[in-house]
Amino acid sequence: MNSLLDNRIRVFRAEHRMSQSDLARAIGVSRKTISTIEVGRFVPSSVIALKIARYFNVPVEDVFSLTDQEKE
Image (tube, rainbow, N blue to C red; front, side):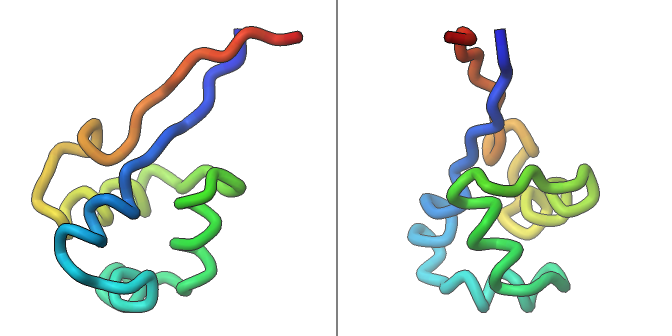
């Protein structure tokens, strides 16, 4: 089984009415970093994941979760 990292960044951004650029600026990364994490092309470092969770004042597990996917 492969584990994939799902995230709810887009949901949290929508609830806070903020753009990818706003979030990127707030945590000190590029907008492209936020974009690639949101769509699952990039797995964030622990530091970035924790910064995102801290920004939204939630546990990191509220933003990120592992899902198992069977290999074909």
